Length: 148
Image (tube, rainbow, N blue to C red):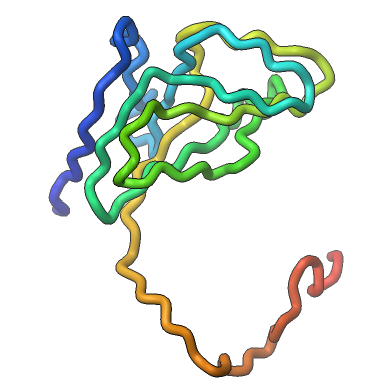
C-alpha cells in the first residue's frame, strides 16, 4: 500500500466547524464550506472565503471543483474549474462561484460550496524544440471532429 500523503492545514479564527471533510470514506474529494454569507446574483462571479489555509507537499496541488448537486439544483459552478492551489500558497482558500441561473442564491455560512481534490503532479520537464512530430489529428481542434 502506498504511503499516506499528509496535507497540513489551519482554519481561520472561529472556523473550526468548517474543517474540510469527505461525506464518505471512499470519496475522491473533500467538501469545503463557506466562511461567510454571500449573495450570488445571476452571472456575476463572487469570491467566497472558506477559512481554510493549506500546506501542500511539494509535488502536489489542490483542485477546487464544483459540487454536482449545487450545479444541478441551483446552477452554481466554479468558472475556473478546476481551480488550482499550488504547494507554495499559504493564503486563505477562496472559491470563485458563479450563479449561472436566473435567480439570486444566498450562500449560508457553513454551506458546502465546492469540493477539493488533492492530486500528485508528475515530474515534467518542458523541452523547446525546432519542430513537433506529425499526428493524424494535426492542428485540428475546437470542434474539428464535427458534431455527432
